[in-house]
Length: 203
Image 1 (cartoon, rainbow, N blue to C red):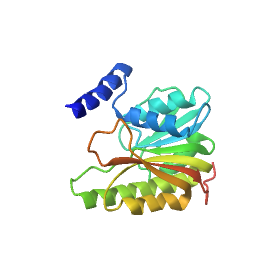
Image 2 (tube, helix red, strand yellow):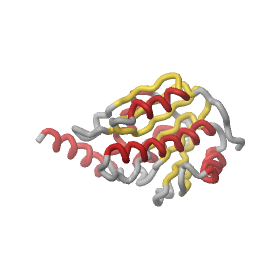
Image 3 (cartoon, helix red, strand yellow):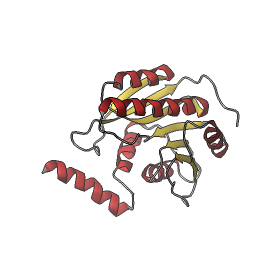
Image 4 (cartoon, one colour):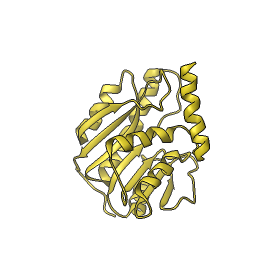
C-alpha cells in the first residue's frame, strides 16, 4: 500500500502543478541536491517530450537563461525562453540546430532518453547505450569545460560500461536514485560533473 501511496503523491502533485508526469520531480530533486545550474544558465534537454523537464529547467534558469529541448516526438511549444528542436540527437544536422539555438556553450545537458522497451534486458540496455553514446557526442561538442550532465540509465549488465563512458569525459560521476522513482524500479540517474572538453562545434 505504501508503494501506491508514494506513487499517487507524485501523480497528484504533478496534476496540481500542471506538469505532464512525475518525471519533473526527479530532475527537480537532482538540481536542488547538486546545484548544477542557476539563474541565467544555458541548458540542453535531450528527450524533452512531453515537457516536464523543460518546465523545471525553465523555472531554474529564469528569464535570463535559455533551454533548448530535443526530441523525436512532438515537443512542447510556447514556453518562454525555451526553444525546441525536433529530430534525432545522433543526427549532425540536429546538433548544429541545437548549437545555433543555444548561442554559446551549455552549462548543463540533461538526458531523459530511453529506447522503446522490449522487455529483454540485454537488448534494452544495448539500445540505451547507443542513445547515450549519441548524447555524449552532442555533449562533447556543446558543453562548456567544467559543465555537468544528468542522464537517465537503468541498472543492468551494461551499467558499469555506460558509467565508464561518462567517466571518460567527466571528472566525477555519481549514480543516484531519486525519491520520485517508483519502488523497485531499476531506474537511476548519472550525475556527471567537471566536463573535460575535447572538441567543440563552431556556432
